[in-house]
Every structure is written in structure tokens, then in C-alpha cells.
Image (cartoon, rainbow, N blue to C red; front, side):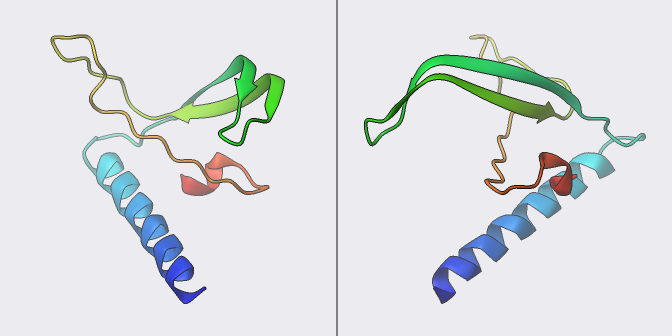
Amino acid sequence: MRRSLKKTAFATLAAALLLAGVAAAHDAPLQPGSGDVELQDFRFDGGATLPSLKLHYLTLGTPRRDAAGAIGNAIVLLHGTTGNAATFL
């Protein structure tokens, strides 16, 4: 239990520092973009399936692609709570 709490606290601190660093690197505060994605026939690792999984997401900044076309500056934060992603901002 204590180890789980430490991991959660560390992850929260790391996310806060990362976002603070990103915001400090720009003259103006970053304004998040948002969007929705719908995944059809989503299958969980345990074998359960959903005919449709809808997710809402926020983005910060502009993606930068390398020579192969892969985006190298993207980070995904999943909060897994009943709140919303704005709590990270």
C-alpha cells in the first residue's frame, strides 16, 4: 500500500514538473487542444470486448516528426479518475 502511494505521488510530481517545464519554455501559456476518438471492437488484455470505446483527449503544443515520420515529442497522461484531464493543467 505504501509503495503504491509513493509511486502515485512520484508520477503526479513528475507530471507537474513536466507540464511546468513545457509551459515555461514558451512565452505564452499553452492552450490545450482537444478531440475525441472512437475505437471499434476494443479488446482488453483479459479478453473482454467493447463494441465501441470512446475517449476524449487533450493536446499541448505541436507534434514534431522525425525523418521517419514518427512523432517524438508526445506524452500521454491517463488520469483514471472520475474527474477530468483539466486537473493536470
